[in-house]
Length: 271
Image (cartoon, rainbow, N blue to C red; front, side, top):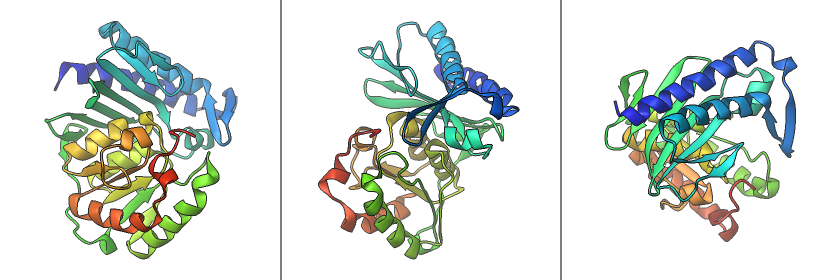
């Protein structure tokens, strides 16, 4: 295992301990509204601080891009992209679908990924060129070739509802052409599940880099494909993402294609 990945795993597990302790008394947490349906708790901030402390101690010259702390040392060739608690709304309701997501971007390329599910103690890891793993077991995307037989996960617009009607149109068409759609509420975990073969594909509009950076590397290292809604590589910039096994991926793009508009192609990330 790559030594940098080992440090990221240590950071993710430390954040998981903070999250698990807090889950024992969710009602006591201080929670703030960042925006419409966008919450942050003292757990998010505490977990992110713990992650950054461990990573910065090991790599003091690296930069950081965190959901809560923003960007620091952004001119570095090494940038850690961090979501300390992806699925905060789930967490605050006691709904057990949330995770820690950490990715390392080297000169614009995602090279390391850790997604840690503290509820199940599931650790998803990937190093570019070395495959993807769940709890040290190699994982691969599914082999299903027909979208009609596929299970697809997604996420509903929850902050910027200007995308809602277009999303509903895509959702309706996707529902008709798959064996089922799921909306667990954590994009990072959704992508990890595609990599592990628990689902066949995933799509969502207007996500932030910390939601998808680690999960995308897991998918590609597990033999899948990740792209934007046109199948191109701008998914990290636009926040529009489609992921799946190679055969299902193309069929998902065909369902999405009739609903593309210029605004959907180039949204404001995190709006």
